[in-house]
Length: 303
Image (cartoon, rainbow, N blue to C red):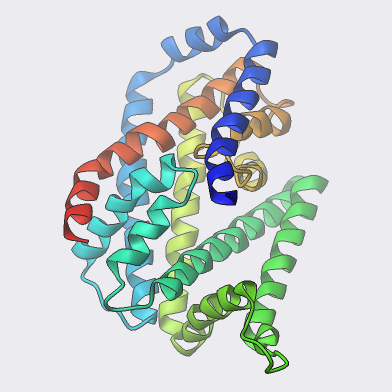
């Protein structure tokens, strides 16, 4: 029942957020800004972003699975990553994670693969939190500094819990709870990564590079729209925007733009911020996922 409700919650929140945004901003001015943008810069930066994101995150998937004892060639890892993209970006029900888990079912338990997905997301939160905190310090911005610090603290606490395995303790009269089982699955990946420090360093490196590429892409989007927002402001604000994007929506659409309007409000006009947010969202829900459709078709035929 809860899964069925989630399927409707994400589109509802997305539509509500977009309704509130467009109720307060003139959509014609947004269209005019996009129409008069620097198209060559937008197209070139989008192509580069597409290549970098796909390459770096495929390499990260390869290393995560290697830690779990499943060695992949880069081409296979990239095919799998592209195959799960459409479902991951457009489905509110984590269909992409299901496809990934089911594909590896003969090599690694699906629940462990799902733990690997969650492990990657925790690494994402850690990296963007460090970005926000450092940028907040350099710009003397309290909110990015505080939220970044909280993000770092929470991820470190989570890692400590996984390392110590408190959730494995039970009274012996009954099996572990579903939550304890999920934590155990995540801990398998985490503890395996501690034993394979070279693999962990590579995962951290690919994550840093992929998020750095994201920040640069947003910088070029603003530049193409005629507003030169500093990269330091983007690395301070965009991680916090990414926190907001964790709210159940269709690939963060609506919530992302609302958060960007709040944080970038003092350094760019509302229509330009909204245009930048919508272009980035269009990349996430259309351009990037569409590249994975042929691969998704092949993978589904084989599982």
